[in-house]
Structures are given as C-alpha cells and as structure tokens.
Length: 146
Image (tube, rainbow, N blue to C red; front, side, top):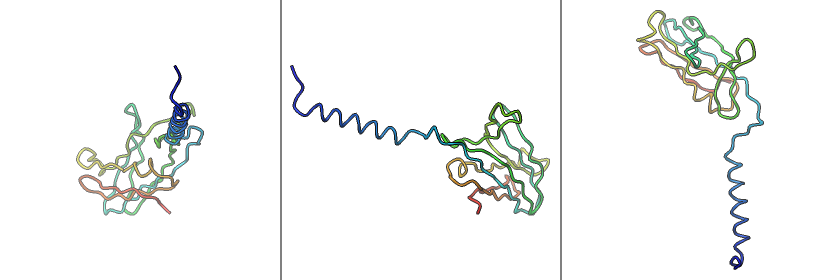
C-alpha cells in the first residue's frame, strides 16, 4: 500500500519549515558575551548606598554615592539569554547578578529600592545609566546612556 500522491512532498516541506522556524527561535550560542557598563547616578538631595546581590547570598558593596555623584560598574551580558554577571577574580566562575539595590545609608530595610536590570538584559547597548533618588524606597530608572 503506497502513500497518497504528493504526500511525500508535503511531508518534506513541513519538516523543512519546522526546522527553519526552530532555527529562528534558538539563541545564537556562538555569539560572544558583551561587556556592559552601568553608571548609577544619584540625582537626589541625599546620599544613597548601593550593593550588588549575586546568587547564593553573595554581595558586593558599591559604597556610598553622594548627591550628584555616580558609580560605574563593569558587567557582562550573556549573549544566549541576557543574564548579567561579573567574572570572579580568579577567572574560574561567573558571578551571576540577581539584583542591584540602593538605599538610604543606615536604613536599608525601609528605603531599599531596586535598580532596574531588565533594560540591560533585554537591550543591545553597551552603556547604561540608572538615575536614582533617595526616598522610601529609593527610586531608580535605567536607560541607554549615550
């Protein structure tokens, strides 16, 4: 018993279309990770204190940022999924960034605000600025920096 006329051609076409669509949705595994700089700018009238939170409860203190001051952090963005990281000092592992928080000095619980990372994760630029202002919580907005 044979296949109906033209069914082999339709099946082959369906397979080729499926493969073509799948290749469009797969991340480009060969693309290199991109270095990204993030400048946190304090546009408020009071100082803020910022910290990077990595996976597994590891933190990096970025210190105090005074009124009209700024702090630049060098990050890397994974090409495959946009995840952000800082290479560990020994070069053996990537320190994956979960959040960057800023707060009023000495009052992190009540005033802690998050630096938005989604524009960096989803973007293509290599320079970003997050403008922050003290408050309860600290308010930050992240955008591409020219």
